[in-house]
Length: 436
Ligand SMILES: *Cc1c(COP(=O)(O)O)cnc(C)c1O
Image (cartoon, rainbow, N blue to C red):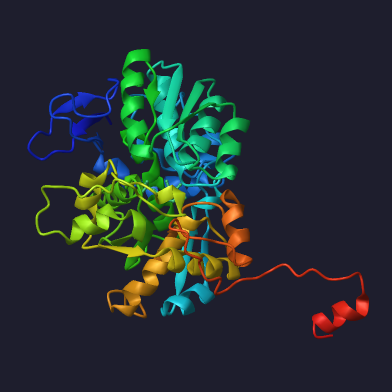
């Protein structure tokens, strides 16, 4: 099998070797997409091969990404550049309380927060870093609101590369920043917003020969396909009605749609689930875009605002791909307010599951789409929780103690608040408190 990079613009479709260091189409500036020339005859064996690998002790077989490496055969001969931290392998968790809350019969979460650095970024990063090694790059960089930097720091340090991280000043949760520092990344806090820093870093990457591992990187998108492949493998290839995910830069939306289309081509599934992408109301350009009649202009948001920092993106780079994938799957885009996200997050916590704020947008979105009759009560729904509960503990403490303010300073009601109770060291008092 062989792979090439193809320009995603329908009017261009120029192809390039995977050994070129490019992020956009040099001809038209369009997004690039990897295209693997699949051997459909050989593919008939893959489901069995993938199952057998779960019994193996070989590192690549144990990875929930590289177990599916036939669909990630991007590097031209072998996988010797791959560094795995055993990413993927994330569970499907049944969440009855969350289903009740949303008004549907059953809800299953695929929890990407179980990854080595606590977010789905690991699924893509192991692939992006493998490509950096393959290209012989020594320095790698990304701009990130948090999880990408944590993941890039870990994987590139594990691979012996030098990670450099650019973050918007004062816009990152300590959990994520702490990871980047601990994994040895040089961390530059720049006084500009995400989109401005991205433009800056693209200039620097060119000038200094640094490999860029932002979500525009087509190899990261390829790695993130494994989230959907693993989910369907875990469901014995039974396709749900809906896959629900939060949308920020829309890389994951792009990856999910691509994986689904490829699985359909390979004959592994017989229909496409609908993709439902949920944005935060203060940072919802893709929601607006999908409701516009005229799709020629993307309504970028200059000052995106949400406490769900992982989806605080005003000008998502992957929107053309996301448009294609949401349309192809007959999916939908919804948005959720800060209050809706916060309450949904608490409900996910009450299921014993937990997540970071951006992930909880999924449940808020499902509840709204159910209320509108878009999602049926008996529909099979899998929602993807993108990040770990401990990524943003400050948010959690504030919510439960009634101190969480939205970006405009309005207090968020702690509907499902759970305050710590201060009590004297007195058994009788505590017994009374606990209702003896
Ligand atoms: C990156 C991230 C998102 C947004 O994903 P996109 O691919 O940028 O749309 C959502 N949730 C979490 C926890 C993330 O880390």
